[in-house]
Image 1: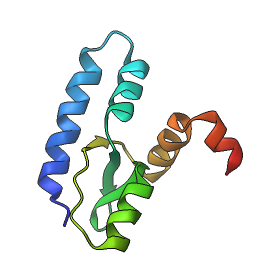
Image 2 (image 1 turned 60 degrees about the horizontal axis):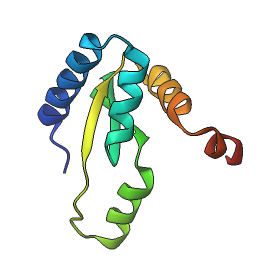
Image 3 (image 1 turned 120 degrees about the horizontal axis):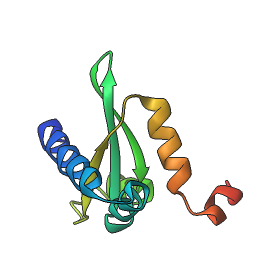
Length: 100
């Protein structure tokens, strides 16, 4: 079960980290590389929208096996779904983008 307050706190921590970095794009890439699962959160009609930036396979595996596997996760706040999808695309390795 997702804890939306935890996701908001994680996103706030990521924002501070990226804001303090000299190279913001590299800082964002480093955050995404450091975690098994990265979720984008954004405002939506239902309150908070979610989009998986990284780790769909991890989440699918947990859902299919019905276990409570350990994985690292974080969240990144974005303005909308379009930005979440763009961030996912831009941070996916080129080989994977070409295979899709």
